[in-house]
Length: 98
Length: 360
Image (cartoon, each protein chain N blue to C red):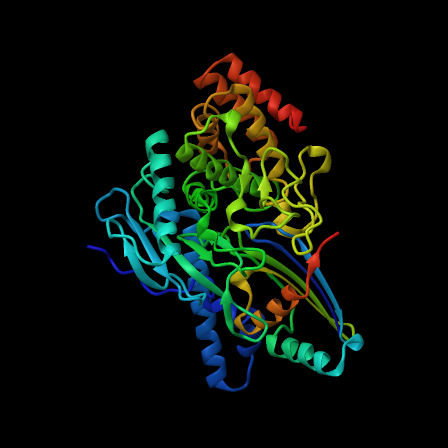
């Protein structure tokens, strides 16, 4: 499984990126990531933004599971509740974009 | 008498918990019970969408009116959760609490109200006396599903929300008067130009919030343009040699450099370097550096106190812009307002400022 994520916006307007290839992770970490993806319920692509909110963070996440690709673009208030831990994991592993 | 707010969670609306494609799939399920619940959810989601659309077109329906028609602040404690507004902890006229974030939100939203009222005769965000609602200690979910302090401040369409920061890079967002002024100016914009939050119009939305956020602070300090600081969010960053602020309106792109967590400030100072990618809704917090610099250049050329002339020009322009206005239109309207309200010298200063950042 491959995950590519860009986190941007928020009051600070930072742009951070994260790329994860589960095959290269240690087994416990690999299991954790796969579990977070499974529990996120992200099985179909969508793009959704709040019309009235300002300064929320934006998530652009692509999950590639054996070429089955899900692409999600949304702001914080539109992250499905089960997907919030996955987004938090990706945010904690993201680095400033070059 | 303070009217209690309904406990709502605009950041986690129903339609966001279960994605619509899942509900739509459930409507095709063979089980009539599942199908019935899915149809009900779709109807509910449609109703929520309708409310959301209406609130975007008519933000006044989201406003909680002040019982006196005058300044009315309500501060809530979200208790490290993301459910807004939380528990009411301080209302207008009540004495300070022991919680510093509560008092900061109260005092800074009061200063911002006074700024718009005294300088521009504006009665709150909607110019009709709506209450200023703030939630402090707002939390967010971490990667293990636990609540942690939010690393952000935002306007949700009807109120302000402030996190306490991670204590490593960010501290509590209520500390900064310019951050509070920024968020409240998003509220003013919702009732005026309501610039679409994407691309150049979105960058103007961010720009006006930065301008009036900083002007509230300068006005409160009483400083003239020669001594003014143009840093945004300096008070909410933990000190480090690689960061001075979140943004520098005078020198966009220099607020933080090679910071291990923040990276390097991505704001351009000129149209030559405008960001055209998809991140940050097309760079709303990135490209605001261009009009921010134009404002500072205009204010410095005009002189005096920034809020008196440059601020007045920008306030009038903010009211005249349309939802889809771009940098060029903003340049045209600010120059026109400068000429109509003040004179040729001010018009020249404003036009020259925009030209210097590549907008002509």
